[in-house]
Image (cartoon, rainbow, N blue to C red; front, side):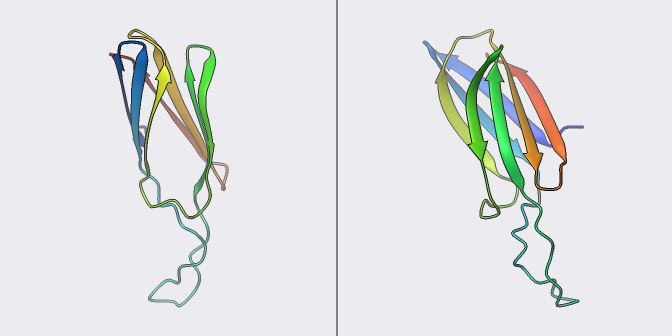
Amino acid sequence: MSSIKLKAKAEGDSVEVKALMTHPMETGQRKDKKTGELVPAHFIKEIIVTAGDKTVLTANWGGSVSKNPYLAFSYKGKAGDKIKLSWTDNKGEKDSAEADVA
């Protein structure tokens, strides 16, 4: 099961993309309340969104992005496009999701 909820809707020649990603997004600076030890950094570092074979967004994130991040943006496109969002985190974990533009 994907950790990404992805929706895309066309209005005219503009496509609005909305994505909600499930991820802990730890900065590496928070202490565990029980042990006092630092919680290791664990965050999404790169997001790539493609429409067909064209990259429409590349984002490089750090540890300051909140837990379960939400991303919304628009690009020039049309209904029927197939979009794909992929992320990679600082531990090498990856996930992706695809959606058809409505």
